[in-house]
Length: 468
Image (cartoon, rainbow, N blue to C red; front, top):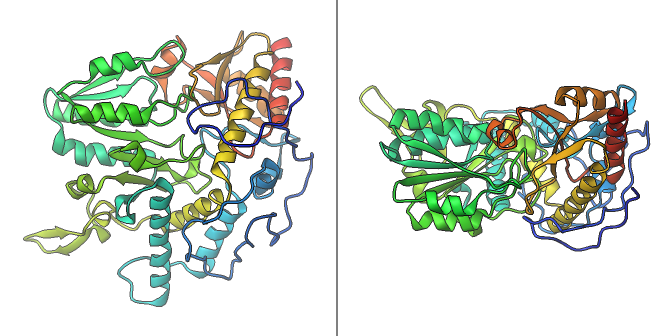
């Protein structure tokens, strides 16, 4: 299937262009060397050096530039390696994204020239590290459209963010007879924390069913909302079905019943712009490692009035104001919710990732990914015995599938021999797969650096497996 050029412009961040043609893109030549050290890709700033303190003056680039996958790929050293004698084709972005050299260099520069603990230190390097950490907080606030940096709490990732809300806000606000609505498409990280706190508070987790195409059943959702509903926990994009629910409309409806809404943005933030004020989300969480940043760092946005009323979940370190054995007073938010030494280098890397991503036209990135997904759907449909799971009209570029006569683990192993990395298993979303009568499936998930040539390699390998 020959790729054709996608029309320039943008598409809705939540909607795939029906019948979109595949973009014309090139693939990295086998054995291609990574860009020379110290050389900036066209349109990008010069890389930091290990001897320089990372720049924290501007949290997020103000003027995004042109986007092309060829330009992007120059920034990823790992995309130029080989696996089992083949050029790497990384299609496991739903599990984690690869890291551009700007992030790698920022981490190296921090540990080489600026490593220190933050806040209460009085020396120069402590001040520098603190400035970088708080610049990262400001960058996250800007990235999410949050009113102020104080609305951002740093956590290890989406899972910890959801557990923080469950254990702090949930313990204070949930009680016997209360409902927590959780759609069937959710990741386990947005199910299990609510089960744990519901058991403790004697509240009830209520699943919201899906339609046949993998969308949330909006009629059922409206029927399940009631005065008992205290919280709706919903993914902004499904990691296994790709579904992008109408979060703003669902949030507005939940608020009519006085319920709060937590949005799991782990799979969304890398694919389209997010504005938490426009969504009117009460809480929004994401993980840095799915956003081209380091592992072990993420962020929770919360409305100020909610964060102010949340008691500490963990104690110690910078979350205090004063301590004696008679009484302890706590620091203001967000520090009250950040016990112990934070993942300082992780925040530095996340800041670099946000600067890198925001240097591109996000609308162009979204349009490209949507066109590439449409091309992949059409190409994969030509593989005998292959069935794609989920067909909601609004979705990100996640392609979960089965292949007749082949176990998903066997599919992943076969593709790995050709240097193609996908995910196989239950994808931490067992209820979503059970909706289709499945226990496991294979998943190819695309990002802005993937190409139609890589999709062709995936399809060719799957054809050989189907015909073997």
